[in-house]
Length: 635
Image (cartoon, rainbow, N blue to C red; front, side, top):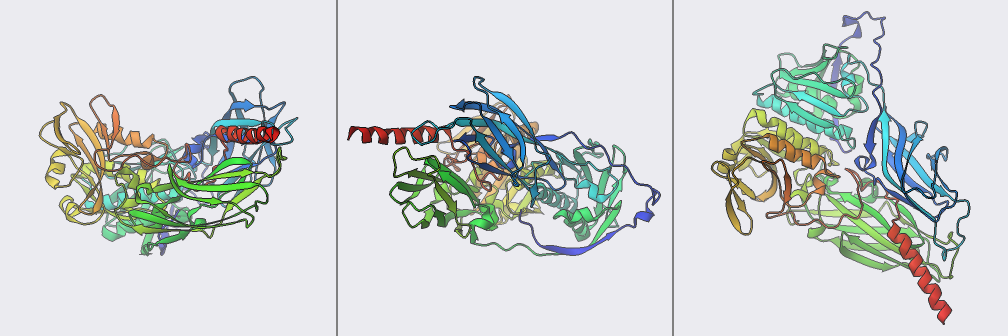
């Protein structure tokens, strides 16, 4: 997570000033039931293929501060050539956490492993999966044993503190945060609310915490086990105060005026909020510096370090997050790719680098053991998450070589990615949140529409390596400005704005579709539309509804249900009609994305090494080696 450096002063009320006696301990609320998250939500593939016996397959899972990964669940999806086998699950110390028996004749078998004792290092739990087989093959001419693990998920739990202090409103895990602003909130309250949405999204990333803004006069209480209620309002005295502490109606009330109100929200920039262990706290000053943009980052800075072991064919997956550069939209990128590998002597080795289906480079792997390439990534392959795949092949010199004769390939963390800012990419949804990072304007047709802007910012924040910085502006000013823009407005306001949207609302239930061809359609019903397009040299994300704004909620639910949020979308329009059916369309921009090489990954799938070696690779290994054996026999 990248956040702006921030310094300041915090005043906290003396605990002795509270109504509870100083020597009375407040009991903590019971710990919530463990919350199960698919590995897709944690930036990993939810499928692993264990190919060959005694070959470790490592996975690193992010762990929220204060939480425990209590158990691992999944299913054994398929078994090939395994006799009386098991899968050992170990932590980073090599301690066996559990063993999963491998069935012989069952199609799928669920399993559960207790991971609560796993070692944690720097907020990461490292798990290693090893297939053990009682009679494994001894050389590469035999079909290797293989076990596929599917539907992998981890259950997290942590203490749920009684809501008596400011710090209790930032526990290790939450499923949802509601921010109450009331009806017709003034612009400074709107600004504080959207800033808080952006900071909380970055603070909890990669955990998918949903953050909503409630415009009701009195927001409804939320269950305190896994949800929090924060109320923002104007007030003469800047402060953060726990209201109705220790009850089901507990809320954190943030008050202030002007910049003093914004200063209170700054406490949620990072974990410093955990210092405010009292019912009341006040941020008295803030000195914030904006993170500067950069054009070049190393693989280590981008989390692109990865290693794999190859016998036959294998693919190493990685990617870079364009939001990490804080440079806005990117139109091209250059890789200085370096790697080290086991020198190839006598055998055959090769590497092909691609982004989706676009081949970027090929290279023979020789006895030097070093790879050093400079590669350009074209504009059509650039998106907020630009995936890379290295297809590796190693064929040993000897026929039927032992399975230990493998090539190890490791990306050099000093490799670099250089980017060129600009709008020369394919546009549309693939550029989000990159094109609105980090600063962008937010324009609302009316104060009650802030909750839709909050949903957009929350979803983008979950996919951004840099904390977003939304700035509230009047609708007319936001449209006229040259800044990247998030606009939420009704049909009439959008029609009058002059924005060059793919779908323009007209009179009644009519819309104009400004693609090729341009068509005007009376759809005879309501429509909820989310659009990403280029207008006057800047990116615009426009949210609008015609007659039924609940359809806009359905459109956001569609995005929320995607594996990787915005990055899973193509095109430039998400629209939900009267039958509550949502369509993802390409009207002008955001053409089909390059093939995503890492299957089934969530918000930070590119940071973690994809360990799975697929069944296709297993078949390819056998086919290549068998063909060579037959050729040798015929000579």
